[in-house]
Amino acid sequence: MRDVYITACAAAMPNNPVDNDSMEQVLGYVGGSPSPLRNRILDSNGIHTRYYAIDPVTHEFTHSNAELTAEAIRNLDNDGVDVAGMQSLFCGTSSPDQLMPGHALMTQGLLGISEIPAVTTAGICLSGLTAWEYAWLSVASGRYDNAVASGSDLLSPLIAANTFSAEVEQRTVDPEIGLAIAFEKDFLRWMLSDGAGAMWLAPEPADDRLSFRVDWIETFSYAGEMPVCMHRGLKVDDGGRTTGWSQLNPTECIEDGVFAIQQDVRMVNKNIVHYTLEKPLSKLMAKYDFKGEDIDYLLPHYSSMYFHQRSADALERIGLNIEQSKWFTNLTYKGNTGAASIMIMLDELYHSGRVKQGDRILCGVPESGRFSTGFAHLTAV
Image 1 (cartoon, rainbow, N blue to C red):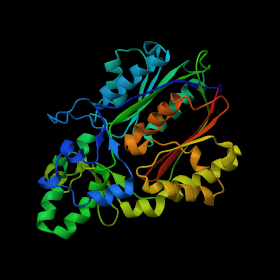
Image 2: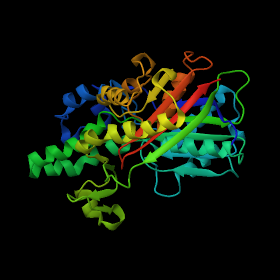
Image 3: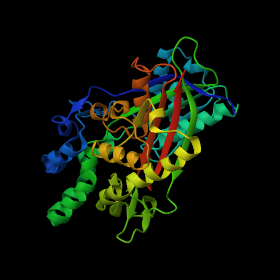
């Protein structure tokens, strides 16, 4: 295995940032009225602005996921690489524009680059880091001399007001049940954001600018012991039994809000820290022999600032004490961009001028789908 370096980073955010007071004007009002959960959710998540691929005046969509991803990849040219010369493409997303063909193929088509492998990694937030992992391995193995990895999500179409028709109907029939169901979905509206990030990986560092050596990437899935927690296109009954959308009739899908993003908030609160931080990081600390003082920057993905202190407490419990001044996140002003978040954070840090040679960076991306997580360790050279 040869060394691999990130020699360019880029991001693409659609349109202008949308603040909390303007959010429902862009997405629409569920049931025609402001969310009763608004203040409660905003107080918890700490997000002030986010981005939507929606024209705030016409309410038409301005980008597709593939278009936003292609824009981020083209922006790699700004760091001096020749995107037209890419040898392999790995794209991760939880919100492709279509079921078939794959998201990477649609992105490749927009880039106009042929005769390269284009691989789509599916999942939720972790899919961006998974794309990065396999791009890294493709270069480290010597199979390709460069690779582009991207992470993207276009979530605004999934949280627009018209996707909540089932909740509006349920609220009319049974207000108490309707409010409970609404919280499971509505709280996601106040944190999710559209965006894309990309990186260029090569076997040599750049001659004229900073590079990040990828020391290791590790991913873990606990689906063998944990049930479904976050899902879309899936019906989960009270006993935990699952039925995919393709085995449900269209009326049932609409009535049950199957195509809305849903998350079991109680299950997340109970399990996310243990399964995505404490358990895997304890193994990695033993495997790679690192301590908190060895890390110069921690880039943590989390859906809400509610999890910031809980994450810090978890790291302290396992002996990985990383000073708060070393934590780097843009969640409060970029929003939760899902699969794109880690690459958007890396792009901002890479171009900030703050990183110096020898700095060590730890990236972490949890996912609550069935409790998966991934970590990457970088060294600035």
